[in-house]
Image 1 (cartoon, rainbow, N blue to C red):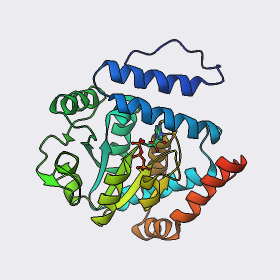
Image 2: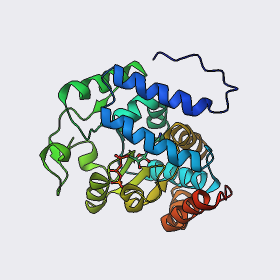
Image 3: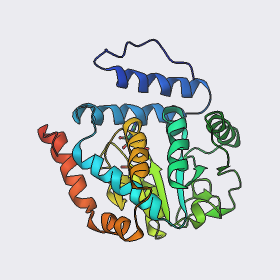
Length: 250
Ligand code: ATP
């Protein structure tokens, strides 16, 4: 990935780096034009959150790690923005949790699917799912419904970062435990998640990996307790409070 020369001391370093990665993703044919718009929306919310991981998001990231570790079959769903922003970090999270990686696009084309799979392999990914498309999510139109039967189709826990609301809701209706990363706590995706993570994916994924490594030896009962104690509603309220009132302890 080509990186521009932004001094790390720049006050908006992370924001500029994120923007540049999305631009590079569009140039490489990984990220769609709509992905640019989603990025703009995310940036606005991140600005309001103080561009940092608020404590409630850190707690949700720990719960997400526990969910991935406790799953029978966890899958990390990757779209064009996710691939452009955190390709190596997704591979690390998959390794730390034993999850599969599946490419899943809102605007699905064979060419973009393959480019993203190649991009993930360039970042250390081995088995990348999504190209079989032999499973369906009920309630969505044909192209949007496609998944791999032995991937998202049969997963019990799915991480869906930056997902559109329709698909997030449809996956939740299938009975899957859904972990959503979305900077907008009011989005339908965040609202339909069992574990909403209101944080920038750039910070959220490495932090989930750190939590997963820390929880790697935990007993099943301990993971179950972490999962049980979590209240998604409280997390969304805390994020909204942080955005509205600048209460960054939220
Ligand atoms: P809804 O869930 O309300 O239907 P949508 O389908 O309109 O939302 P998109 O336009 O597809 O959502 O945008 C995806 C979401 O991803 C937005 O809510 C945006 O805030 C969020 N987002 C964008 N960039 C990032 C990022 N880097 N990290 C986390 N979230 C992000």
